[in-house]
Structure formats: C-alpha cells, structure tokens
Length: 445
Image (tube, rainbow, N blue to C red):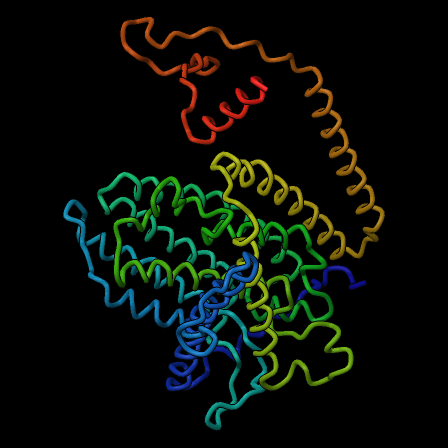
C-alpha cells in the first residue's frame, strides 16, 4: 500500500521526446504512414479470406500468391475508374470531404508507442524512442483528431445533393456523438487509474497488470464503442446498403470513394492501436512470454507484440462482420444512450472512489464488496420488476376493422389498424394442377 498522498501511477518523463534530429522525425513519420497503408492492404485481404472461410466460400485467389495482392488490385481498379462530380453538388465541399475523412485518420498514430521510451533502438546510428512523439494530453489529442473525421462524412452526405447520402451523413453524426461519449468515459477511467494522459505513461502504468483486467467494464465499453465509431458491422448504419444504397458515399467514385474506404480501415487500425495501448499493455509482451524470457520487452521485440495485438483486434472486427446482422437504428441508439453511457458513468464513479481510497491509504476491500453487493441488488430488483411488469400488461385488443376506401380514395392504415385480406384466386401453377389431378384420380378410384 502506498503512503498517504502518493499517486500510484507511472511518473511522467517526456523529456526524451522532441530531441530527435529532423531527418529522424521524417523517417518516423514515413514509418507510421507506410505502416498504416500496409496494414490496411493486409487487413482487406485478410477480411475477405476470413469471411469467405466463415461462409464456406473460396475468397480471393487470383491476384498474387494465394490472392494476397487482391487489395492492391482493387486500389488500382478504383484509381482507373471514371471520376464523377455530381452536377447538383457543392463542388468544393464535395471534393474536400474525402480528404477531411482521410487526413485525421493518419494523424492519430503519431502518439502511439511502439516500444519503450528509453532509447533502446538505433536508427542509422542514432539512439531514439519507438514513438513519433508524446505529450501530457496525448489521449485528448486522439479524441480531438477522431472527432474531426466525422465532419468529412457529414459534409460528404450534405454536399452530394442527394437524399440517401444526406440520411447516411445524419445517421453517422448521431452515431459518432452517441459512441464518442461512452468512449471518452472509458478513457477517463484509465486516466484515473494511470494518473496520466500520455500514451507512454499509460503503458508504463501497466507494467504488472493490464488495464483490461483492472478495468474490465471500461475495456468492454471501449470495444463496443470502437466498433460503432468506425461504422463497422453490426453498426454500419450510415452505409446500410439495403436502405441507403451506400449511405454518405453513394455519389462518389474512383479515388474519392477509395479515400473513404481507406479512412474506414485506417480508423480500424487506429482504434485497435489505442485499445492495445490503453488496455492490453501496449508494446509489452503477454505474461506467459515474460515469465520465461527476460528480453521480451527489449530491442525491436516490442514492435512485434503491439502489431500482434492490433492484428488480433482487427480479426475481432472481421469476426463481428461475418457473424452478427446489422442492428436497427432504435436498437443502436438504445445501446449507446441507455446502456453504455449509464454503465460508464457508474463505473467511473466507482473507479474514482477506489482511486481516492487508495491514495489515502484506506483499506477499500470492504467498500468494494459493499458497492458490488448494492449493484447486484439493483440488477436483481430491475430484473424482477421487468418480470412483474410483463405479466401485468393487458393483452392487446383485436385491431378494429379498417376500410381503406371509406373516404372515396385509398389511405394507408394507422397504427393499430390492419388492411383486410386481399382476395386471391387459386394458383394455376403446374404443381397445383398435378396435385389436383392426382387427388381427383384418387377420389374416382
């Protein structure tokens, strides 16, 4: 137990950042850019192959060995397509929207640590950190950059001058607002426990235990929120093909359409990297590896661990797409506002209370048991109340008779009214005729 007034968080020492020569900063920036592009190309092929495997299909197998160059072929195909600009659109905003979507997606990776901040690696003879930069409010920077990307989607829907893209843009605005609140609350619990908002400090605070184990509710809320934030199935309502043709990008083609797809996949990589940094130990090797290998977190090995974690989270995205159907919009909003946000608020209060007790040196074990017991009682009472209320509900009355032509012209039915059955003649298909002939033959016999 720490003494009174001592924070149980990693000490922030960000003096190692900002000292690299200019050419090394360019090299790191190029690495981040190339890393995102290569990961996106791999993720697209991996998604198509995994979904094909889950659905018992062949999947891409033409371009390159085992079809591994399929995503590159798709990019070339999109670049060679005719680039259209809708006549009724706002030309400037129409062209800028995909750019506004793509640029913020690249920016968030700048503060993701790929290794420890202690100059363990050498690049062209210069010792440096495996991170482009870091600062005391790095996580706030990630939230701010992620919120800018939504403007591109909303402006794309509005500037297209079409109804379905506009609906997709409005859906996406409501979706981002709903799930960014829950995501921010899950971040706040990590900030309280780590005592810092810098990404390298958060990873350092997980030296002994990952926050996915210490803060399981925040981890689950973030996992759900990151799927909603990236517009991925089963939360791909802005791009609902069955309702909106393609959503906000319906009127786009060629490279502008490709930039929207690129931004979506880069956002998947970014939120996976953030999840790895906040909850899965970042660049740290998992416990079974560190138990028998002392050098697992040194040299270039941390880069391998965080890439493996990002790929596992990308597989989680793919698994959801191949498993779950799309939610209705009311179900989606109910999940965000009535479940994720209240649960995050209650959990944040509990984390803050435990944090305050730890800093004061109080034995908070009994307090946690009392709080968990109270939460369990509330959950049981709510379940019992739902059961009693469902039994007390009266049986629905039979719908009243409805005549759609009573006023002299056809009108649609109101809620609670049903149209009378439409009279239909007997089917004259060959199967019906043969069945009737056989039945008649049996009667004659």
